[in-house]
Image 1 (tube, rainbow, N blue to C red):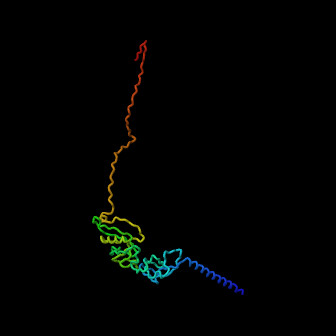
Image 2: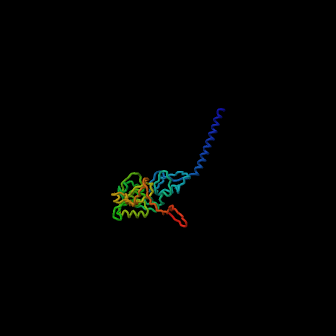
Image 3: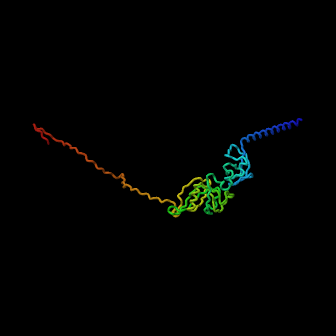
Length: 283
């Protein structure tokens, strides 16, 4: 009996430990249930313009501390809708990433509100050697005669997003390919400028960095800039006539200054006076 008593104590301690662990797990689960929400996330990488199906989505517990703006929480909120931007695996679906309900997809679902799509005809050189892929940003440059009928090339539009290359609104591989058309997302005013530019000259696309949002004003490049350089000719500085040189005075030289004449005083010479009787005589 004495040998069984230690085993009994161990069994009681084991039961109490399991009970404490179970209670702690239940308490942690209750705490977590109040600090997370269930959101809809992508089950795999999805390209823009994709119509969502149930096998493309899954649910995930998302912490409330990292709040999301308008997240989708149920499958029926997303099935059949088109995504407007690429969505990576595990990324939550937000309302602003989806096209309006009833949109049939395609290029129109990718356009932002108030934007337009315009297609520019390009070749393998004008299309930056095939490196203008959907989602990239480009500058639009036009080559046309100026007021003096001299050819000039100038960037007329900056940071224009590429929506589609040829007929593809999504890029599945990051490799250059030769195409004959590039579709750009522009404002209505920019669409008018592109239409005018391609009617008076030829268009070229200049690829720019995704993070570069600065705007640069240029004067345009002309034929004279290529032949003579772009350095401006400076006007010669006009020399200012200097005053006549002043001779330096050395220590060995003395300056003679005119001495003003001073009035001279008459000096009385000594005289001898002799009195003889009533007469005074002077020598």
